[in-house]
Image (cartoon, rainbow, N blue to C red):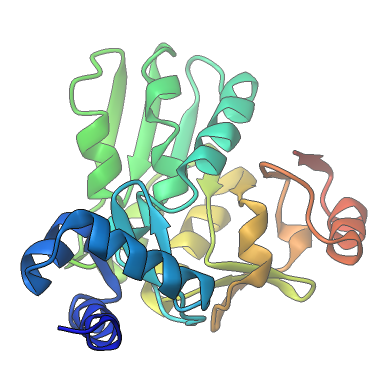
Amino acid sequence: MGINERKREIVESLNQHNGFASINYLCKKLYASRSTIRRDLMSLEEDGILKRSHGYVSLVVKSAKESPISMRQIENLDKKQSIARKMEPLIKDGMVIFLDSSSTVCQLAPILKTKQHLTIITNGINIANELSHAQNLTCFLCPGVLKHKSLSIVGEFTSQFIKNFHAELAILSCKAIQEKGIFEGDDSQGLVKKSMMENAEKTILLCDNTKENAVGFFKLADFQALSCLVSDAPFSPSLQKTLEEQIPMVIY
């Protein structure tokens, strides 16, 4: 199999797996050595077709839809961990907190385990699993419909369940951030997050600076609805100016 044919096979394989696969899988699929596949992937990455990350590869596609959790868990992991560390002083013992199902918010789990007497309400199976052995907190997992792609619970039952609680914080992430506000890639996720915001005293958005280049079709909120934004680094000067004018606290 020639190099161009292998490249076509790689892209086709990624398309068949929601734009995401491990390098080991591609080696087996194409009956090629790891060094051969790595060279092909480097070439495709230079062409802007895909992105490599910690033994995995994903197609670079600007999509307004929600990405699979398996892809989001490895994308920009260093940025998400940096954001989580900056959140540590903002989480106090005894708080009642809404957490969405995002991979960014999931990085808070190690910090939450160090706190005492927290009450967590989440629609994320991934987050509930991370906290399942933490004896120092109470975790409520929302009822509703399972979204297999994101390992989250959504729907009318979910939003109604959230209304039973009054939280001090809603800690959320988003698909994209623009000067017009923050956006989601899934309307059902967006409605659950809106319920969390409506039933919390303050909302904190966790958002790395790459999301300025992302696309989301469902508007979650204007910046005035946020109490705080935590990022790993500043955004573009124009967006940064807007954020600092409209959000009481911006941390990066």
